[in-house]
Image (cartoon, rainbow, N blue to C red):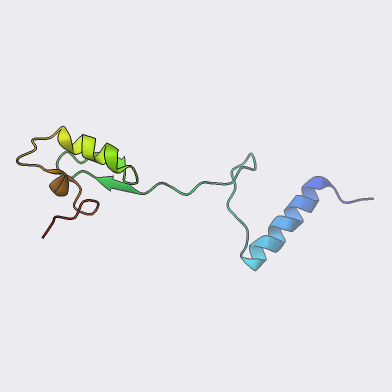
Amino acid sequence: MPISKKAKVQREHKKAEAAGTRAPVKANGLPVKAPKPTSICQNCRKEMVNTNKVQLQDHANTHDAKNWPKEKCWPNDFPAAS
């Protein structure tokens, strides 16, 4: 009898697992995406994706611009000018 599809997939997964090349997948077979990098606002502690600089800047503008500039909200993303 030929090998079933399920057994074939399990055999491939086992081989890839042993070789260390198996990518993590969800139960439906889709690959798991890596989490997006985030930063936490130092004023209000809101977590936001740090790849969108315009969004970070707009959020920093909601705070008092004099006491909390964007460099103080996001010290890792907007380093202070020396």
